[in-house]
Image (cartoon, rainbow, N blue to C red; front, side, top):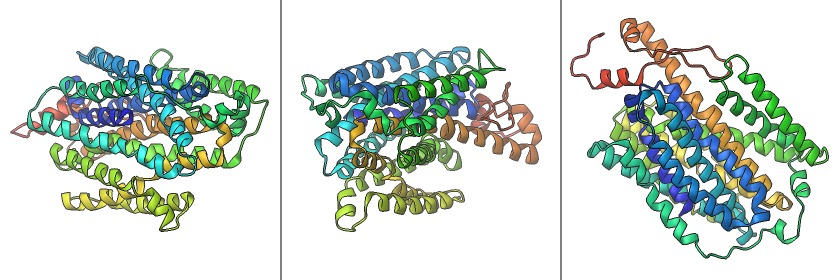
Length: 450
């Protein structure tokens, strides 16, 4: 129920990107950054939660997540004008994601502890509630937005319903200790497998995050300050682990999970908006429900695949990579709704088992790390989605739209461009389209350059 609540909120937020763009004149890059905060906050929640869950227990972290879920709604609802909207929406998304990360810092090691011999199967079942939440959230958006044309605040407030339910369900529950906590494993011992190599991956992404949030106050030095913070954190972890190099295999899994986060969740955050522009808003939401239904159903089949088809977790990940690659390539050329159903359906099959199966691999191979390695890997995936996947797709949308308009209709571009340019990492600045002007142009009955 807790992860379902996170999925509901994620889907509703993804479905109201166009509302935010229209109401607050955001470019696609700005929307990507706001959506990215919905992943970056997860990183802090799951990593900080993973560091302390073995010491303070699961129940306290669930209570903290509930508080932040409710708080995130009130912060997000503070957005009222184009001047204040970006900050309210960014930090509202960040708090929402922090709560999600805190919950996952509880859920993953808890399931791993309860089912030590069937981690792949039960972690996939646990994470089936994520696409189920996305199905419910998309259906809410479809009815309230496309059919009833209600405001985005009303739509978003409904994710508080499953939030309250999971809070009530967790009350007075008794939780077991993790394997590492039962053995009395020290924090240093749990962190040794992560070591310098694993910390290097996490600290690099944290450096990018701090550089990004500081660019408003330190436009010329934000990136440098971010790298300094990342370097200090790396040194601190190195000292804490007594300069343990860490596991090479685990660090490779961390890098791979960063790619998974950027490709899977970054795409998920934008898919309703992208397909809604290719077809209709209603069809975009239907396609999102379609892919989520596929994921929901297949995640109950992990045990069958592992035992009957004799696919190991690594073999399952390899097969999924090939299928997802085929699906994404087909999706890049989709021009009809029928083709979109096929392409995104194949992609959904491929991405279904990535996240929970990689967590299961870490739980199986590194049980001595307790919740630490599993939480860091989940955080890396979400941070990558927030810093690379979401903003990167937003930047690409701005860039290629601008290039096309400049070539085909420069007058329309000049009339619709935003006041400020947008950048992504080291790539050239691009001045995207103003969200309000774009929406007005799309809904105008008479199409003119003005």
